[in-house]
Image (cartoon, rainbow, N blue to C red; front, side, top):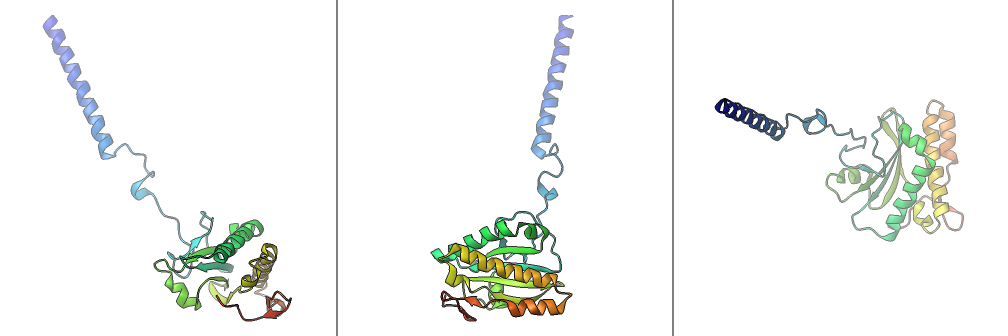
Length: 213
């Protein structure tokens, strides 16, 4: 009887060892992983940046939004080497956009992108928009096509007055959004364009020229 008991214990021990080894092999080969948590199951979000889908980065926005055919795209272009004014331009605009235009951002009616022109692939923006350096650029997209591209050069004179800076950029954004809303009313759209203020000057006048970069 003792011999049979020893044989039974030996068989049981071997079975347990085989089960442990099998479990270890399953873990090592990844067969116990939960589907969709890693590897080929993960999918990258669709980039909504134009004209190069890998070029621009959105400031502070991680949620991808489907692009409507009519929208306003606001770009801030800068170089790797940055001065104090360059950093302030971005900070002021980013704060304004998220504070005053969050509904438009969420709906996709407004896109806000910060782009380093020195990064690989971003030279496409230099060629497309004839950029010379730091630029806050507004582009109105109607029916999927850019119809009005213009730099907001007034920021160069307003960097020392954050509130006036914000008022100026907000007014330009609202005017462009109204142009989009009025696209089916040509007279209203023309009126908005004609009534837009020139680039503000410290003396209260206006000019169509930007100060030297």
